[in-house]
Image (cartoon, rainbow, N blue to C red):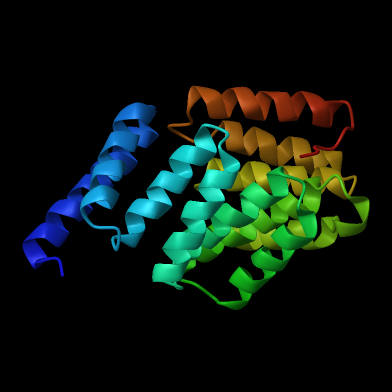
Amino acid sequence: MATPQRMRAAMKLVTDAQDLLEKGDVPGAKRSVDAVIHNDPTIWPAFYVRAQIFASQGKYELAIQDCNEALRQYRGCVEAALLRANINAHLGKYTEALKEFNSLVALHPRAVTLARVLSDRAWFYATCPNASLRNGQQAVKDAKAACSIMIWKDEHMIDTLAVAYAEVGDFNSAVQYVSQALAVKGISPNGAKLFQKHLALFQQNKPIRL
């Protein structure tokens, strides 16, 4: 059994790995979490961070395995379940993904996490290639709720609302909200590039697809 001191050291490595991943140092992040898992495979946050790393590398099956392990150790790891749902959507397992999104919404997690879950479900409802699973009206409702929770300061959630409006054919609102996303302070260059791409499609009255 790990001592409190070793647990703190392990969690610091996990936090460092998350920071490295966000800065784009994928190899450094992987080394940190691998060290944690090697020393103590009961540190479930390490599996969640490594799942994010694998997903960023396109190693989706490995990412899902790590999500499953994190959830096996701690069923309350909503973030791991949400990542698994998004990976399944990316892999074309749409019904499985939607089932997980719905179960996560039903859990009523803490506010910031709920906002992410609602926004990701909105994105799915608005962009799913399977028309029978798309639901533009629900996408708008989910995306608005997410933006409200985050007091309209999360540019990606505002962009998701724009995408939802495009799905219901309201391209004027889509243009309005993606423009609002572009105006958020501190937006990343990659975010700006993506939103400009969305804006161009909305101006041509075209929705977004996964």
